[in-house]
Amino acid sequence: MEGKKNGLKRRSSGALGSAGQLVRSSSVKHMQLLLNGDFHLDIKFSYWVALSSLLYWGVAMAYYAYHKYLLGVLFVLIGIFSLLADSVLPHSKFVNSSDRFFATLGTLCSPVRLIFWCEKASALFRIKVALLLLVSLAILNWSRSSTSQEEFVVRHTVWHAFSAAGLSYIAVMEGAGILSFEFLT
Image 1: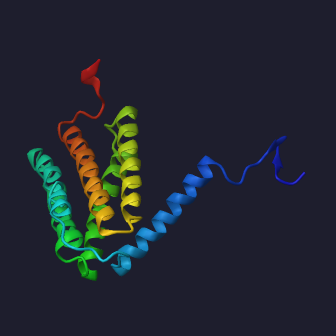
Image 2: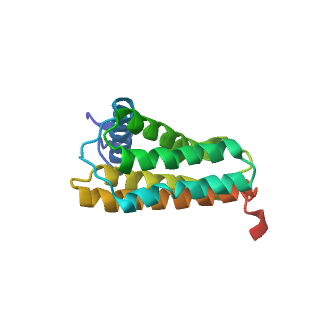
Image 3: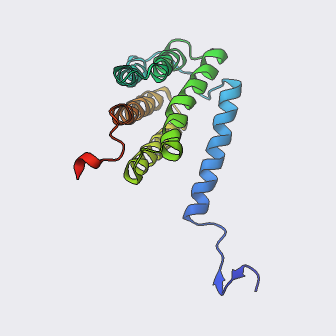
């Protein structure tokens, strides 16, 4: 019978299939936005979004405190370009593309680096970082689905706050060398 393997009916759509499709479509959409610098809303200045953009400077300070200056500079740039793209110059394609480039490096590549390539990281720490990353990306997708300025302000402020908090946690844990949680035992 077609669609069966080892006596079990194969499902073409399921929770994992849907999640995989969502990740693929979100990735494709992100790359398109990264390259063309467009956004579907007419964004106007918001004090909430502007202030929340600067939360990434907290991540930068955590990295500076642990003498990880390159990562500190990256998060200063993320804060600056986020402020410009989301509030001050939202119609500049250069600023939008730069914001997405630096934000991708910091909010995606930095956690992925710890999940897959950090030898010191325990399995528990990797799982926490992966969960923070997945929730953060879900909030970003929620923000990108905004249909009004009011929705964008709330959703993008939540995105900035959650991702900056998660990244600050990661920066402190990484900087302090507390990746294995051996101090808890």
